[in-house]
Image (cartoon, rainbow over all chains, first blue to last red; front, side):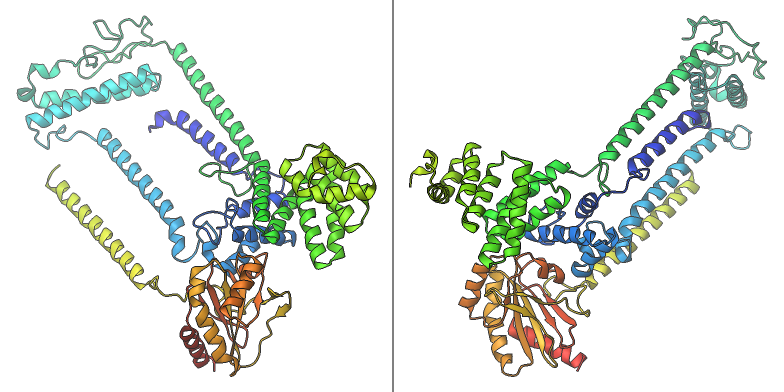
Length: 442
Length: 187
């Protein structure tokens, strides 16, 4: 990077910094909800019985227990750090996927920073040395150090390339007239001094210009056959006298067009930066706290709910009613109106309350089932569960038949109908209603 | 590059070589001083600290709560009927309980880990375990002890502190030695 290109680089640096700040989410003012906090913590807590999986992505029973505990601790008013500390106090520091910033683990955080610092210093050192090599008087140019033929040719080639670079930068609009003339003047002096010192080595051929390279008697834009002849702009300033005897005239250029190009470039960079900032901000808004912008797979809230319900259903089928109930409850903590979780948890509570003779649990179950039916009148499972409570618990055959009728009308799976058929048939018979054909057999 | 430059490069190479050697030696030292993986007694944040409450409902439906008794150590064993290493240590646990029951200086408690109550009850019955077995259907006890997998065994001193955590099949002699060590440290 050169000082002459500073504006472009600084613009890019500003865009990068703004994008990173916006992407980090520190500008968000709204505090995260309890569910968002729980999701963020769960994404960085390791599943105790799995290898390198977070509890958010694992369906292992231990992961479900940790998730439930995290939500309970948040509900009790603990901070995120206190929740993590609670788990670390039991499982050790390895329960958190992020290594602790203390002891030997501190190296994990420090080494990348140290490596980056060393790399930056190394690159900067190399760049500065190169810059000094260009700026320093060429070795041998002052006559103190003898140069052989190869070294002389190398030095000459270097100076010609330097001149060509200056021309290219000037024509691209990266160099002002003043800088260009100064650079050209310096290199021409060096070249002339070099040629004057060693005429016996270089000979006449040494002064022969390379293709596209400007020498004292053939400046860019001057008369001749340089590649820039086709540029028709008029010479702006009288060429200053060159000590080597040639006129150092800057190549003519279309300064207006060049400035316009700069504006176009600047505008394009600014537009890109603005788009980047807006994009990252939008992305950051949808991101949960603690989630990294890249490098991790995250689920949307709907996907998380669907995954939790599926895991709970599997656990229920495996006879793990307690774990399933926890999972349904965790869904309800974040989405109190989820009718599937309400119906399934209500059903589990009813079964537990009935087997343990706990009336209060059955009351809770009834409330959940009624709520599920209100939220989604077409939920056949909730209708079946509510009908069963009304029939088994209350002996209220007409009310049960009403629910069973809605259950059968909502197109339930045949297997479920077959399973429920004996109870439904009993209720219909007790209510004196004709038994529907779908449950009449058996 | 002149002779001076070559000398500088050799200097740099020497320092890089020394740095790499020192780093490698440090790594070897760290790895050599780590406890071998075969040792079953592992570090736990709970060791040396008060044990979490051990209470709940047993697999037979009876309520239970561990009450510390003077001079009596308690072994808390997390197990599952599907866990082969648990089957390996089972007879030793029965022997340990039998040997210490009459003396009253140590007792056993089992906690079901990720298993159904029915399967765990059947397993304990077949094993001949006469000590309390807690159901822990929601895994709360396992979490409070930081258990990751069965079998996991904790030894709790009479004063309620955790003195050992073992994550492999444990034998009666292992438990005796742990308790003897704990007694000698804290008579």
